[in-house]
Image (cartoon, rainbow, N blue to C red; front, top):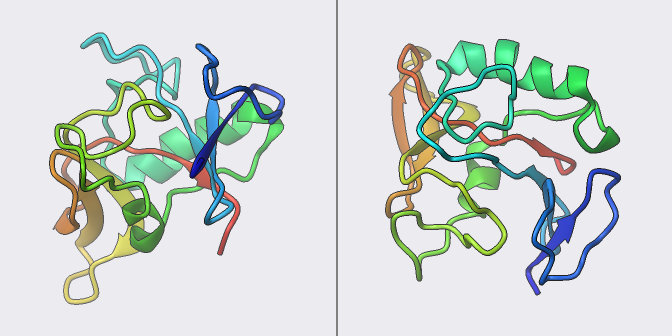
Length: 153
């Protein structure tokens, strides 16, 4: 399988596991945070809440800092993915969201930030709209979704 489900200690689980907090991409070696509790209510006390949105600056200051402080999965090296890393999650055989929801449940069919600033205007950054996939750049002052990654680079 392209992906493996991981528990809170980073141990691999069966593909049939009903509860997991991270996913390892077995092709890239990247480990991704899994979103929780998609219920239409933002809960910033839980940085993994699928409903939380952030500006580009907040995604680093509030979201990434909160994950690293909480030592999600026992790790404190979580970061925003580059645009190239984030694009590896796109599953073009799926839409709304264009991602494998067997491993990434609670993914919004919306835009997710990357760490990559748009070269032609530093007030913009790249991200992936997981409605249909692809990549786009938007103003860093807008609030969108984020998904943390570790490893790679």
